[in-house]
Length: 293
Image (cartoon, rainbow, N blue to C red; front, side):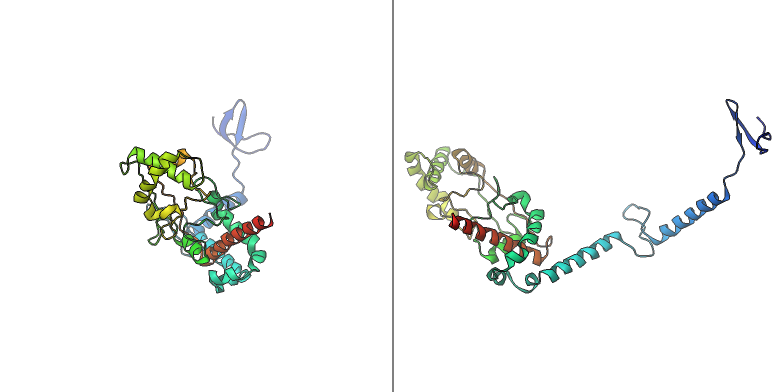
């Protein structure tokens, strides 16, 4: 259809008609056209000033030098500075000196608990008492001793981790042809014996020699454990993976190589000190509870 004048409005139509409805040729209001062009102009300015278009190996960074990542980093640093102002002892003192201050737990324990739960509770539990495959941090059974300095060092470099100075502790797989199957059964019975569990006495007698020849270099004579090598004591009731006959057999057959992440570079020095103290406090509180009971 050709354009024609609409009788009601007196405006020209576009010539389009749908089911008897004719489209008026009404231009877009000027204010909307102006708004559209302003939007285009503002968009171009933003593209030039701020990060915008992605590229193959990066993105257009903009001439204003703005970075939301940098702003977040600044905010995190500012928050960290505030924490140091609120807990100045952890910036000024080493862990040995911090351990001697009996007032710190009451002042900062609750706040540091948040740091622990954010980074450690997934493995060691919210109550620090561990779970299968992860050690209890509230008792007095330690792989590398429980001094403040040793706990701090373990937090820094981890165990069997990627840090060049990480602590190494590996239980070899004796079932891979290192010892005979009968000797493996015998040493399991010996470990059950020295740990105070039900055992086969006759097999345990044979297991003594097998243990001395293959295990005592790490676990020490009698299985008391070796803190220098991170080998746990086998004469107590503290087990990381379990102390049943079945679990001990699996451990001896296939070995163990648990990993503790190193937190240096992921947490600040002050945060690692805080976690060190939190672990120490948990052990001390457990001892107090045991004494009161």
